[in-house]
Image (cartoon, rainbow, N blue to C red):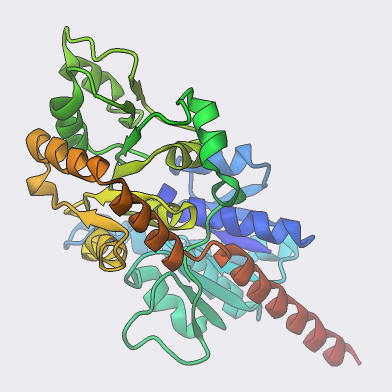
Length: 365
């Protein structure tokens, strides 16, 4: 199988979860990405081979750079065809981002079945263009006008580490006592400045609970500067990035975060949350993601413009004071989660590969 995933870590993480499920079924998996892409180190660390093709995304305005992007996409198709033949790929999986388009075209030209994954609450540009070429499109959410046999609502794949995460193991990993209250603040893989500012303002003088603050690798030094000479004490743990993020979610009683792909980890683990959507996300899909959990009773939606230190401190305090509500929110999150999404999609991929082998045998006869 060849998985094409590029653009952001939001495309790479569900692709890795799917690759993990496929490898568990005995399939050989390789990736196609772009040079210097966010998440390439994750693909390498997971032990998957990766071919890289020069590509760039289209800008959302008229600019000469879009001509270069279109030219690169056209040139990428024959390169993708060569990669598929060299890897002897049975199925092409487009995991979103601008790599998925040329990969889907290459799969269609070489008569390989194509499966697309859409991890957000709207169909991205590449997936919209490539959908007519795909046998299956796995959706994280039901989307208006996307029904029939081709579109299947599976949820967004999460890794085995997410499915295995437990409160006991998470608290042991972070040194949090079994009866201690713990809050996780996380702004996604790149951090979120508004969330960091609010967290420092709310809890920088010393939180009355264990606080794990994941500021983002590029913003952690700025957050240290925001703290200035204040010492928030040993209960305030500030980090740039966590390799064991699912354990941090499992350790927490309440999670404050952006509402990208993290919402599926929150649902799979079953944690109450305060979600602060990134206001400039494409199609405002983070607000839709947050509403999904909020309407299920699993989260509180806090608009970015209202995310002040005072508001965050009051909201977190009110939720922590109502333990029964926190428990109900966690149960509601778990009820709407789809932790088996990776296995569901892996099953579809294997089915497509099996059908292709059957057709090839019949042609040879």
